[in-house]
Image 1 (tube, rainbow, N blue to C red):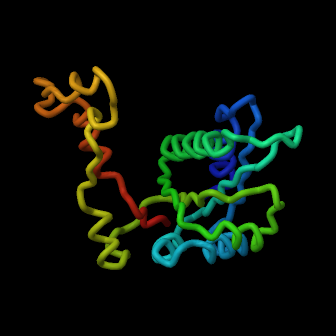
Image 2 (image 1 turned 180 degrees about the vertical axis):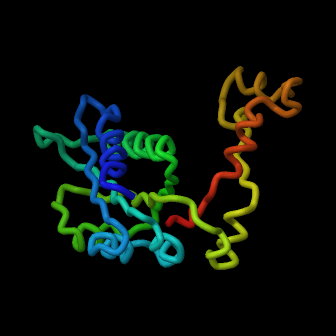
Length: 195
């Protein structure tokens, strides 16, 4: 991945909305084979280490605990989620793929990356191009190529719209919210043999 592509991802995250414009998000970028990538990788769960080392970039997403006036930031996790979502959308626009990793050693990341005490690492984002699933271990390969399912939209809603969305849509032949776009998204990679 080029520096311009990484900058584009981070710029998208930077422009994400945040409560009271607090902008509590901070990022650490590790490029494959550099020391930062190795330090980030070492703080991932063993299950994620099986595939994440091939990622072109590993990005630690962290949040500040306190704002400019030393007041607590109660919405910082939500704001960080917004920023990472914007980063993800930008990556897709660039033809890149993203996988979030939440099983991380936050204390280890803070120590290994020399992060300030008021910084809390929350996720690591693996970014890169999709590679050949045949290079994955068999169990991950099977999960990578199988059809993924999402809950129908009606299951996510409460109230009167739930019943409306549970009715069959005659144009699609399935419950509303289970259209062709869901069919396509179900085939997006999970482990992204990232190269």
